[in-house]
Image 1 (cartoon, one colour):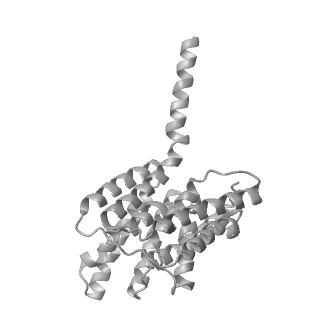
Image 2 (tube, one colour):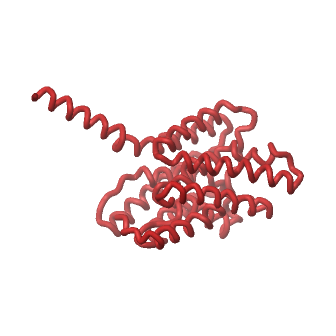
Image 3 (cartoon, one colour):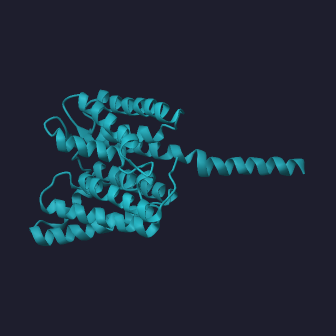
Length: 275
């Protein structure tokens, strides 16, 4: 009996480690893999100081604000993801935009709230804000994998496994299929080739977007059908923005659609505040 009890305890701890404790560290490891693959393949990092600065600023801001507002310490994997996303997606010849973008991203979680929940994906908010109001100081990452398909395949396979494990695979698939459909329509409207319209999907920027931004559990509606609808609407708004030659269309599309969807969902369902 004693032996059986010990074995059951070990099994429960193993299950908890696989299903709960360890998985929260998988997304940070995966986004680091995207960073390393993109850098050693195409040199997406222009300055190591910028990526370290954005990560450090995000973590420090998260620590300070969590302690001040909630009186406790918080797991920092989310702050790390926000920081590394800023470091990858923001392009600038200065260092201060990385600090400002990281601070704005994390602060949005604590300031822009509805029913005690933040409604913007942090890095999406910070990057969109900087691209809109500080265009002289920042730009977005635009590198694609080109003909080197193997890094892209590895990232996409691992990404699919991770979002499946997080029960968010249907969001990614809906967005990608919608993007392909709207790319075809856009090619018919503009006269550009279909491959030219689809090509942005192969870059590191879109991989961060489809695996981290639109699937963010904290800022997506909770029911499956709603998540599918929102992913389609994000692709639709991006389609319209691209027709008007808006360069950073995916960021702006999620910036516009995501919070509205969250507010409508929370208001209709009268969810209890999530602490």
